[in-house]
Image (cartoon, rainbow, N blue to C red):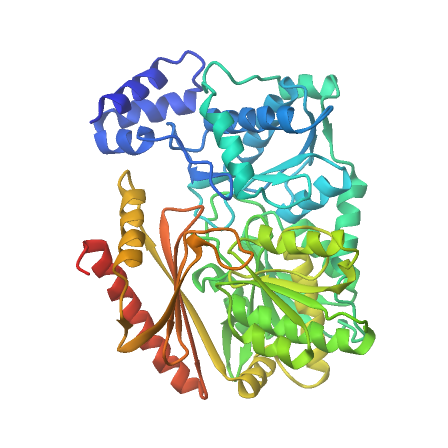
Length: 567
């Protein structure tokens, strides 16, 4: 074991302020050098989504000390970048220790004379973006690890515009954190004392009420939702209160909530990985659908910024992918906007470089301008901000990403699960009036535009060497990239690290194939993973499925060869 790792471990064991639960964990890892190494070989990295990692003891884990260090780094950044008193809004989800971390971060900020607004109970991440903007805060924190397993938590940071912070702000906060001794330099004020001194205040109820009202206002249309029957699951997360209130506002919808997943529970007992994209997480909801025969199944992830959906196709309940939900909503909103909106400039839709190319075809049909951004909804939020600055906020139509996140309004600067639930219900009611399910509508779009298929492959690189392995793979792909993939010639390579158009530089490679297929490879900004996005388009469903099977098999083999250096 490296000397520095052992020294850090002993430093933590000797720390007198160490809480009892962390002391127990430190003692338990005495017999496991590998666990000590993984817990202390580095500081938990402050990346594009702030902090995210396993709960536990150590510098490479989510705990009160790493949360305190991040909060102190944010405080130092705000004190230097904001003229006058700064303020921060805080929200948290249902995860293990989320409330404790949120209150601790509030105490750190309060000790640094930064005014804190905190939700009195768990709330969705988009409600945090809304609060930052409505309360005119200089930043925001949401304690969440999104859809990761129960053993994870995180510390998302937002700017004063309600977007997650951009790369330059990440670097500035990381630089401040690098100067912080997590045992000695973190200021702290007891949460209750902060309340008494009015340095910490609860976010007023009207802020949440207004957020729900705005989320329901977007995508309004004539069809009533009164005949709609849905099954909903918050996956034991933070979505239940806001989603149920929003559905009540729509009026008349018959809603059944999956009982095992209704109440907040950070252990996620029925879905170890609470990701609404995954079939496993929705098993309880699908079981209820087969029993009750509703029109729709909807699931929000633990921090309620993403929505998964399933509908009946023939006699089988099938999940829609994030791309399919995004395309359905884009087409639906184009139909509505065409009826009631006109102007000298085209409406604007926004998606990411890793989302389906089908968006281009839909936007072309309706004369909508499509803008593509890097991965991360903050870049979609940035486009909304640019339209707003130009006095053209009304041109914004819709934004979505392939991972089940979307937004139809300008009220927040992040993907919004509450808004998405409302939109999907209104769209389902629209098609139900016409005797169609969402799968009927999706198949009609495939027949019109072509069978676009997309698939995401994820490869884990855990442990102390994971980052170096991913860096080596990307370096080899750049210097000795493949000439063909799956028997198809590579027609062009785009390296986003050297800059493409107006996009920021990013560690992303795109391989376009001679048959119109595409492969995009990038390391995750929040997890120890490499992500490979596969794209095909064919004239038939069978052709698309065959082409995708070939491409994903070839992509997996490609990454394995480059991991081994056998290029």
